[in-house]
Amino acid sequence: MSKPSSSIFLSPSERSGKPKELFFIWFASNIGILGVVYGTMIVGFGLSFFQSLLAAMLGSLSFILVGLTSISGKNTGANMLTLSRAAFGRKGNYFPTLMVWMSFVGWLAVNVITGTLTLLSLLNIWGLNTTSLLTVVSLFAFSLLVLLSNLFSQKVLVKAQTIFTYVFGLLTLLVIALLIPKTNWQALFQINNGDWLTSFLPAVSIIIAGTGIGWVGAGADYSRYQHPKTSSQSVVMSVTLGAFFPLFIIMSAGILMTTSVPSLGTADNPINVISQALPSSWMTALYFLTALGGLIPQCILSLKSARTNLQTLDIHVKDSTAVFIHAIIIIALPVYVLFFSQNFLGDFQVFLGLVGIGLASWGATFLVDFALVRRRFGYDEKLLSNKAEAINPAGLLSWLIGIAAGLAFTNTSFFTGPFAREIFEDSSLGVLLAFIVSGVVQAILVNVQSSKSRGVESGKMAK
Image (cartoon, rainbow, N blue to C red):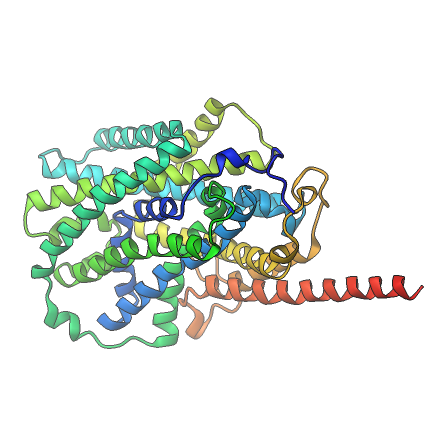
């Protein structure tokens, strides 16, 4: 079992958190303009109003995966990717840890791009035309704001997220209330149902990739501060509902917006056309300010988890060096998208699909290992330290097979899987397939290992 006094696990004095803190952390981290983008993406799959709402609901509920991984942090006091060593082995864990780190850095870049585009749209309302210079200034200003969040301790983080929840949550509800009267309800209800297999499931898959799967590698990073005797059920509920409410409401707003601005679902830069869906300039300014505020909490969590993952990779550098590394990346990637690619929505969907496959495979492998092994035997410190087994073949094999299965059905602008044909050509089902395949393979391999262990023990007893 875990030993709270070790350097791997937080000390008892550091573990005094309550479930409501997790609710506010994840609520605040899901208030943002990306929810509107998700809503427009759902409609872009050719779904009816009812199907779109159902896809938004299921996508939001995928945060239960983050809730389930959070139990491991509550039980042990260790961070997410350190616990992952038990399933993959110390060296085997380097590969998924690197992938999760890349995903968090990618999310930081996505949020910085979104924040920059939102800031530019806000400045346009105030009479400033978008130029290359203004784009650079906006990019550096928002990036600096994100990097300053590195100074937040866990206590400050909880307080900040609570404030963000109340302030920007209420402002979001206000904007949605003002938006509803402009919705073309007749046009909304006249949209025909899309195909459940080739339209609905892909929509759910891509939303899950950006919500529950997108954050599955961070669950224990924040639940490890919970008191060990906290109910596991309350942890799961706090995390799941904390994310579900803002996600579902804001995605629904995005779905409504597509009736007044049909091009929103296919625009290369949906941020720039959102203002057309709002009745007045002051309301648009209010919404952009709300959206900017809502992006900050997401960036805080992404940066915090990314830095934690560097340490898990045994890359131990000064805080200033870690911040510099992440600063270079989260500025370089937005520069590419803003000045060269200029196709935010297209690049964003490719990012969600490819990163989602790796995260889904990791999440399924970790959760099956936790459910079948760790909940019973716990996390011995030897499994997580430098003395741990170098590679756990079952975990690593399950992860790789899941990734291969997901990529086989994936079609992007630069990669086409061998089975991404006909009904699967644009299905975006790679994320769901990766999760299912990795989970099934891991369950089989864990049971095989258990059977062999029981056989060895029986043989020793017979002697």
